[in-house]
Image (cartoon, rainbow, N blue to C red; front, top):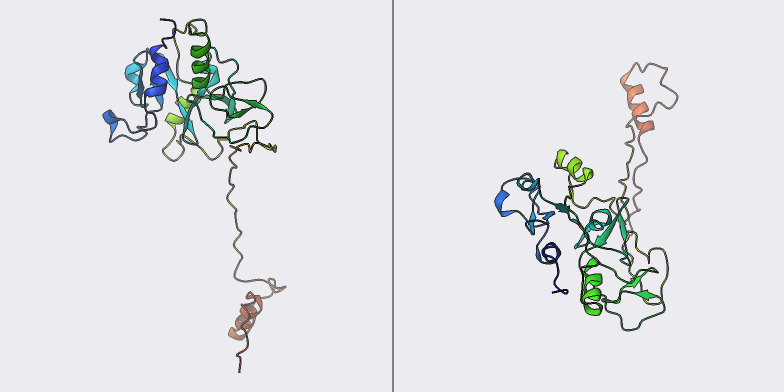
Length: 244
């Protein structure tokens, strides 16, 4: 009985997130990005009103992997020795393991389950890796589980729901994950997961006419106007002389 996982933990592993909700197919923002821990199902923001008295856990997504906030997950289970990451100034933890094939292991710290390079003193790269390690070694999760009677959605999630469609995104260009390998060179070929925010380049439009010292002088004839325009025009593209 000790090796059995709680139902909400199995739901995090098995439920599909960031897919369209079948109950709100025609509604906007109908992606399932919430896990109801009491019903053990994935729901969309439109379904959350029917589960308002349940424990709700927001699931975020980065580079095709589901993550949850460390602050919320620690209320449910002990997350010590799990490598945290940073997205939008908030620490998150990956739900499922992310196996990484390595032909040769260099010196350093690696995950106990998937051999991913980690920062010391962490030994698990995800919640799934820690759960598998505990089940294999101790065969009991009860000492790691915590009592949590209520869990509400974070205020930033509610604020995003109130914004327009253009402002509501599950993964913004400013979302970054600060990994241990970022900015360092490793003999084992560390993965850099940083995302660089691309700032659009604003080009100033040049005016078609230039005063050229004549702004204070009134142009009185068509000939003067033609002369002023010809002076102020940009230099054209040079043409190669014909070859004979």
